[in-house]
Amino acid sequence: MNVRLEDLELLEAVRDFALDHEHPAVENFKAAVRDWGNDWIDVAPTRLPAAELLDSAIEQAIPETRGLLETFARHRQRLRWEQSYKQKDGLVPDAMLACYGFAEILGKQGPFVSERIRAGIGIYGPDIVYPAHRHHPEEIYIALAGSAIFSVGQENDVEKSAGDVVYMKSNTPHGFRTGDEAFVIYYLWQGGDLREISSFD
Ligand SMILES: [Fe+2]
Image (cartoon, rainbow, N blue to C red; front, side, top):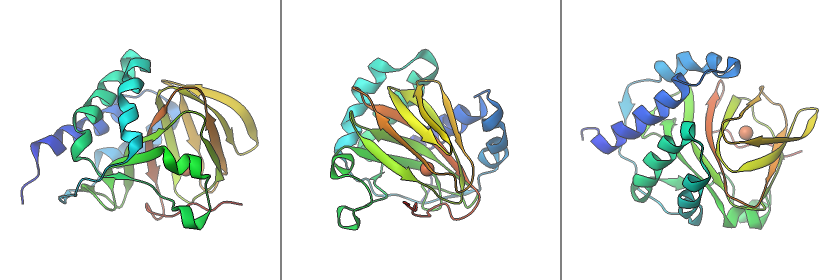
């Protein structure tokens, strides 16, 4: 099967968002984004309530982030919306599972298959607590809409909002709590197993 044009539009949006973002921490990820790989697989759509928060997120967006959010909103019905955690594992609060999800465009499980880089967007509803967790791949968040209070390593209670970058070194504990609005991020992972499940201490 040939790659779908709609998926190419998503690939371009996700790739260009990283490549156009001027920030020292993002620079180290650009080579992997540029040379992500060359395989595409057809991915079946799945749904999650969190995807419905994209509309309010677009209203909260800044000019630099609105276009990417609109692209995801346009393709929302055909995306694979996922969660990394299950209720039975008890790793994150039930309130988080009720209202969070991510859609991946680049990564081990496609639709654009990469062993080097993982990229997509994550949506977290209002008043969510994402407990401190860590993983071996290093990670970037670029906030697209809303805001959250972060703890990363030894730094606590740092507010991040649309346009801000958060960098997590390999294996550094990080967590956040969202505010009154949905918090939407663009994420990048590189190094190690790109589908590693986080550890919670
Ligand atoms: Fe993370």
